[in-house]
Length: 124
Image 1 (cartoon, one colour):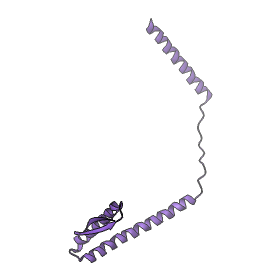
Image 2 (cartoon, one colour):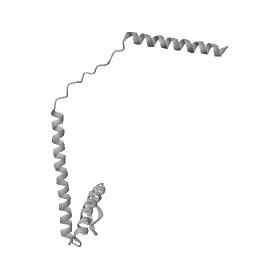
Image 3 (tube, helix red, strand yellow):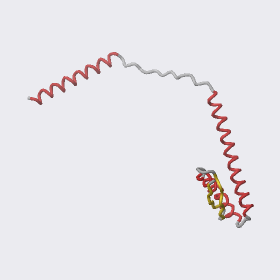
Image 4 (tube, one colour):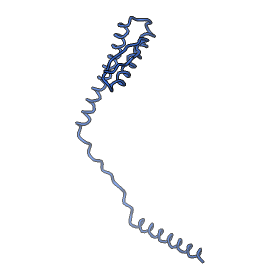
């Protein structure tokens, strides 16, 4: 087992954990320390056991709230997945009238002819 030293509420603790889980332990200790520091700022000096208990309860309260939000989000997601897919929307694309297409083709042909003429004049 690996041992890590953590600091919570200004106190130092040596805690054992499985190899490879050190980062998780340190992250959890930081969360607990954040709560303990908030308690110490509000209340002042507390006995170690009471500080750890209160900080743990504050974290548990936050966790409970997050679990409830997760449960509601999962229920909403399930409800959305259970709904039938909306009917496909009909999209109408306007058709270009043939006379407009013919006119554009004529303009393109004239532009190409003009470009050819200019190219021919440039060569001479």
